Image 1: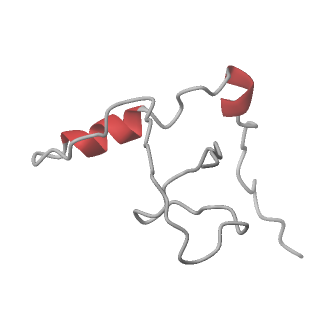
Image 2: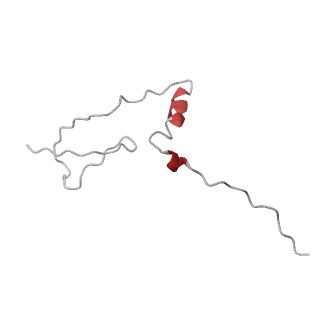
Image 3: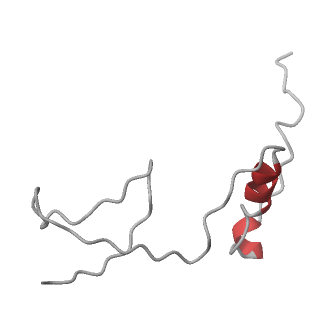
Length: 78
């Protein structure tokens, strides 16, 4: 028996395995997660929690936005 350790992100409830693993290979899978899976809330609390976590891990420099003065006054030919 051989073991391969890999880290993957779930996309559409699928985890991609390395191409070196051929179709038909018998696998035993152990899933380890950092946090418990989020439970979806009926009242929309889940959306609030996701929006609140959007900036998690970002620095003030990441969130800095240049000051926008708009287009200014239009210049008309006279």
